[in-house]
Figure 1 (spheres, helix red, strand yellow):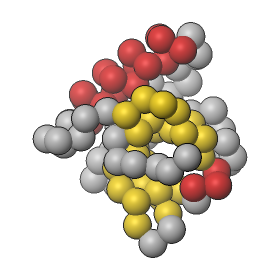
Figure 2: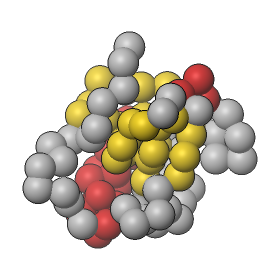
Figure 3: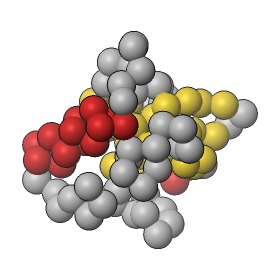
Figure 4: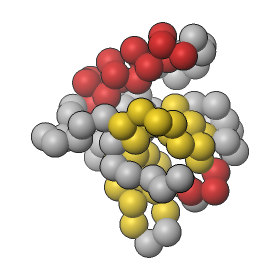
Length: 88
């Protein structure tokens, strides 16, 4: 599955394994993601796409939501999939 801006993804590797993020940008073979808590829209995390698992959920990123809106949307996503909110 291809990644796209606004897609919610789950980290599969690293210290943030299991954490959900929103894709903000795709550039030069890397995916830039934010959870708006530890990583803001201004400073997204650069991830190798191999280390991410896509979900079927895609958020509307036009206009670009604020960090607080992303935190709210990810919180609702955690509630929907019944997973613990480790960072939010």
